Amino acid sequence: SPTVVEKSLVCAATGDFHFHTFGGTHYEFPGSCVYRLAGLCGTAHANLEPFSLDLTPLLRPRGWTKALTLSACGLRLDMSPKDLNHIRVDGILESLPFFHGHCLRAYYQGHQLCVDTDFGLSLTYDWDSLARVTLPRLYGPYLCGLCGQHSP
Image (tube, rainbow, N blue to C red):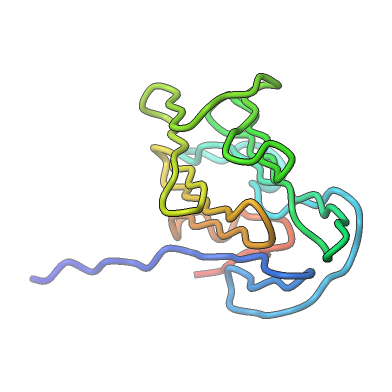
């Protein structure tokens, strides 16, 4: 019998405060605070690796841009146009590519930063106004943040 492949969940934050949620909703949410884009709600869930992805809007002369903070695999990764083409890992500026065992890798793909984890999280960031996070579908009901949650 054919194997059924479930599509991953995808959320994107683009331009000046435009969001496309895991559930497919499009909305605008202007603000200047640090916001949780996606992460597990509350306490740990069996068989799900904990993570959080936060977004900080930064005002620049030509409009808004985004800085991101990913906490995963026991690390904190800060990604910002202020550190173009580098990431900060637990506060230390690192060059790309960056590897943390088999759990996490950060690398260039074209002009974008990509971060992949062994638990299926994938992040794409253009160092400016686009952030896209992809997660396995099994995370759906347990997610909180601006990306929303996705019920099966």
